[in-house]
Amino acid sequence: MPERILVIDDEPQITRVLRASLGAQGYDVRTANDPEEGLQLFRDWAPDLVITDLMMPKMPGVEVCRAIRTKSTTPVLMLSVRDHERSKVDALDAGADDYVTKPFGIQELLARVRANLRRAPERTTAAIEEGDFALDAAAHSITVKGKPIHLTPKEFDLLLHLARNSGKVMTHRALLTAVWGAQSAHQPEYLRVFVGQLRKKLEAETGKQYIQTEPWVGYRFMPEGWSEETGTIV
Image (cartoon, rainbow, N blue to C red):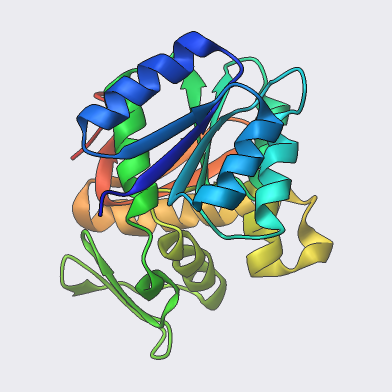
């Protein structure tokens, strides 16, 4: 059966375009221009992924996401405009899995859809093999392109958490809480230092960039490497 995608957006033009574009890729798509109607569709239809606008007059996307998270772990992809950075962070902290900034290219959106639908149970297990990386949480070991890399315990914990959420934006608060505990959620200097150390060690071996900065929001781990110049995986 085709994977089901629910699109919730108060702009009919957006829902029409996404229905056509996603449907052309073989997805089963339903749309709603009203958030409450969208949540009812979510309950009745059980989609595999939800795409919702961040700023809607009747109910913001953050509230839509919170309502979904009370019932399900279904991936939620948020659509947002560029000048709502604080709202993006709130949405991610509320449980959204990713976001795409308007205006967006349809190929970027499709890539984000595929990445979120690929999220598999093995990403939360001890061993992770993806892209250039092999991580074993039980053995506390990591290889990049087959070569062992020495990391401190906190560096390893940070990379492991990023890898378990590969391709997904992780907010500063989520990373700080996961690695250092809730008491460190408002101390981003920890994160800047350790991300810098990780980048040096990983890039020294391959020349690739694996940890992409999402300005004002957090970080995204790209296990196959990222080129900032071209904006593509390398």
